[in-house]
Picture 1 (spheres, rainbow, N blue to C red):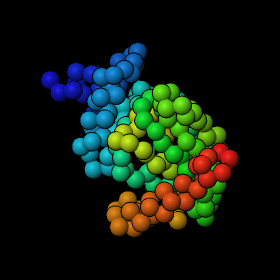
Picture 2 (cartoon, rainbow, N blue to C red; picture 1 turned 180 degrees about the horizontal axis):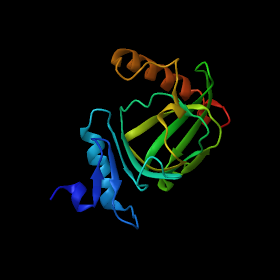
Picture 3 (cartoon, rainbow, N blue to C red; picture 1 turned 30 degrees about the vertical axis):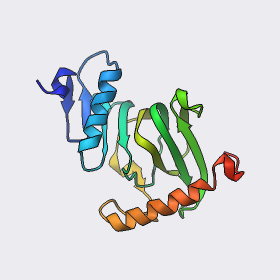
Picture 4 (tube, rainbow, N blue to C red; picture 1 turned 135 degrees about the horizontal axis):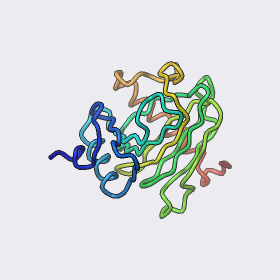
Length: 187
């Protein structure tokens, strides 16, 4: 029996699994599973959805993002999104409509001493800079999911342009570093 079946998950693709049980629980097994899936797929991320379909009013997901995964800066129209960090550390970079950084949120699991939760109520471009090998989050957002309500930042390169992505990420990492407390910026 494969791991997805053992955990009672329905596989939608290499990145997305849906919990099949009526009462969904996430624990160490599910964290290990999403990390394994993120480690072996092309985009270096995976999720288990606790909601059953894109049409659900509430979407909750356990998501693993491996180091080196490019999260194209994006914003959601009419959505609220929140993260609870289960494992790892991340900088969430907030950007204006032309790509200038307007804030950096340093988050980590409770053992890191960083804030472990954030909520973004406004439609704002954002991306994630994962520190360490993996980031595991519990994400909550309102549904239904409509692809056209997610706007990819036109100022950032698409995933397929690997060399441009590498240069863009290096630029964002450098700019975001200026927002850290040691640089004297308030976050």
